[in-house]
Length: 400
Image 1 (cartoon, rainbow, N blue to C red):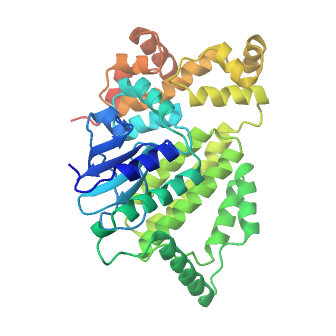
Image 2: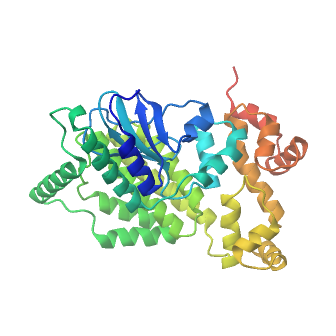
Image 3: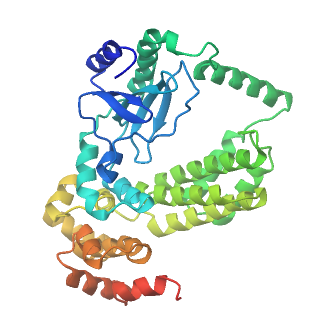
């Protein structure tokens, strides 16, 4: 039983916003509206607790958080035992490619993919403004009801703290005559990335790095990592503008960031910025879409984003706004192979991760990528890679 009545703020929040709201006791859901709030964690692990990282001592302010499964929550700490949480919801769709990445990163069974796709289709999608003001509302409702339960000394609110920190940093930057890289240099390197000018982009990056970097954290290594991660995001947007498929570019970006987080020296982190730029320009050279017409480029994007879906010529043509027969004809002419061969090759290429780095049965991997059976998958795998899936798996693992 709750020690104080929270039904009124719960009802007010839920019926005003139509967003799920919960009361948690020591991390476990005690009450919720609607009655059965399902989260991705519950779907994957069967556990009913809400394991999201929040600040337990941060009272009197909303905390805007996300789970490891890309869900968004607003958390409000009531006291040492209870907290209110709104969610899960999304501010943008979680597409098939993101779910595949999640399955890889979180070591989720590939058999859960259909259930995860259905789950994310049903999660409420809201605007960023609604997300922000949901936090405002939950603070007003639960803070007003439980003032007595809060400690007398409360930390400063996020907004006030952010404003103070902003002006402090502005003053420090002016005091040090610090300036961010000139806009013309940013534009210059973007254009060099787009035309795959490796030498020019490297020279511009060196020119940018002659300037002082922004201080983005108290710890120098953390500050540098944050700065390089900003560069990663900047470079990634540039290669997407150059025609690289977003899912592929973001996969590269995620990998770079994970590598940066593992580094322990400033020299290593600083040198990695050039390596990121080099790899992304090479990716742009390989994946440059300028040689494709708009319908074929649209088809390629759709295929690459839906490799674990049932891909038919009719569905792809519908997405590209073109007749299936005409799409089939121009696709073969521009890409250099029939669409079915392209889809098969891309599925094989992507499936190699599961073959090499997981213990999933080959039959399950074949089914995951919509091959009709294991035998056909092995035949196509060997046609493109010259080895069987089992041979590929064995060669990718160190011998004992």
